[in-house]
Amino acid sequence: VQLQASGGGLVEAGGSLTLSCAASGSIWSIKGMGWYRQPPGKRRELVATISPSQQESYSDSVKDRFTVTRDNAKNSIWLRMNSLKPEDTAVYYCYAAVQLAATTDWDDYWGQGTQVTVSS
Image 1 (tube, one colour):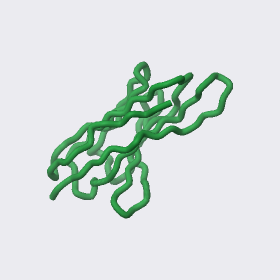
Image 2 (cartoon, helix red, strand yellow):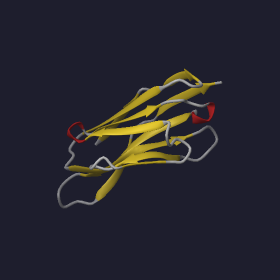
Image 3 (cartoon, one colour):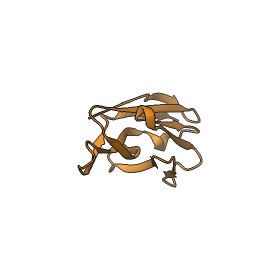
Image 4 (cartoon, one colour):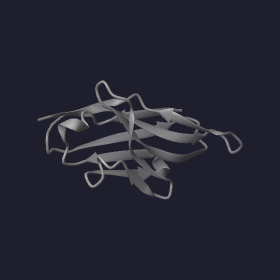
């Protein structure tokens, strides 16, 4: 199973970016998907999650600015980031809770990370 993330870049404060992440491989089912980020010198933190039924949740720091969406048929998620702030600068990682067969456990898989830099 591979998760391929893309869409990061350099943007000015107040700008917008959309991150994409697609899961591929021998996948039976995907449960939760979402995004984490790791700011420079800090620990990885949860940004947003989305369930198969499209139930979304966000950290307080991004609520009302970021939107997570999901396409179950494509095993893909997106993160639309609006009103970006310098403190949003981080490496963003997507993840998916994946089941490889009907009788196996769920395991978390991670994308390679994509850099988002917000200039002031």
